[in-house]
Length: 491
Image (cartoon, rainbow, N blue to C red; front, side):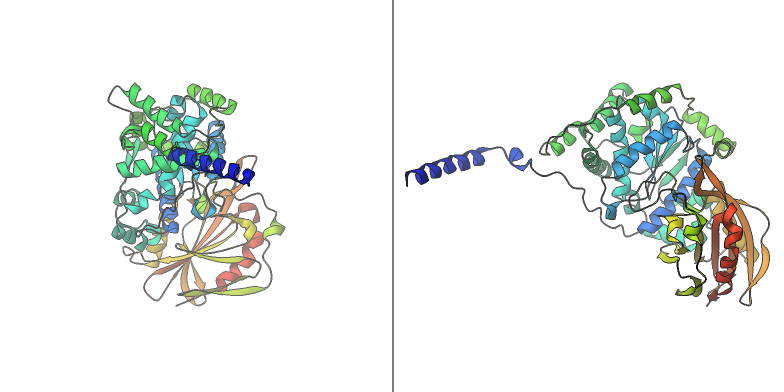
């Protein structure tokens, strides 16, 4: 009985001490979790990815971009992969990370995952944690779908009413302007509110924490820019309106999180920063002037800095896909002699039974599993449909579609003019294009051949098929592709 009485007193003292303990100490037991980002009403995930890739094509025409083989880009992509790895797969995106050799301190994220970092931002960061903070902040804008949540639903509907969204007046730049994305004068302007910025800070802090970086490093970077700006502020601060006392807000946010041994710097960052300091960079004015003269589109193509053909998210790092397709042998993608049938709303088509048909917002992709990664396709066929209100003939609609593809993929080139063919008794058009495959050899993309076929459908619209393969394998796949095309039935 005496021992029990003593234990009861100790328990009472412990409970009293626990009740007197500050609430923050009691809560410091669970790691923060990334929130559910919600679902925008205006644009689906597939639409956001498609819009982002369309915007990327415009960036590569308006800005110089370092190729993926550049050591600075490789470092940034490696850092990006570290942070993407902590995002739950169901909430992740086909993130891309690219570097622009611009002097100004800035970074921006496009819908669907593409993120661009200026060399000036890398130069300005004191350590890897600060650079990671900038990247995590931009990743959070994509994660929370801030652009999509403020997109007018009518604007999105107008864009996707056209073939690949590029046949409306104004082309790609006009479509982006409808969505509040302004490209020009050496900058890209995204309309984020102070609420968006506060949310990106909070979500970015969680990404940083999970990746092993102190979230305060982001606030320290903003503080540094404000102190050095002398009141005017770099473009980065103009694009990212201050939601309030960032440092205090982030400090309050992380106060109750379990302590960690944070990573603040690395030899890789030191090497990358030295590379950034030595690199030739351009001012915003120089970039704007070069864009008017078409300098950057040509320079990027010469250096190999071009978006991958047909929607490959080069540099993508989402656990769910979106990166470059890994090297595969022809045996891994070789089509079966046995065919099965895909039945769509307006068409049906037969395809090898060891390939897979996947339906998305933009259409249908039929491909061997080893030949795709996320939205990057190295082997297979993409099928879609749309209406070109401006076209007076199938020839004109086909030409408009070719131009649309080239706008979204600046490295894509038509190797001839569309020719007439018959598809199951229907008048159709055929044209070959060349570009870069997601597959690489010695860090250089393989040459790719794309076979575009357009067929009119009963509602006055257009069905299109794009058969894709590296140049070296296309002729081996041609019999299977021709058999698939011959089975096409449209309504």
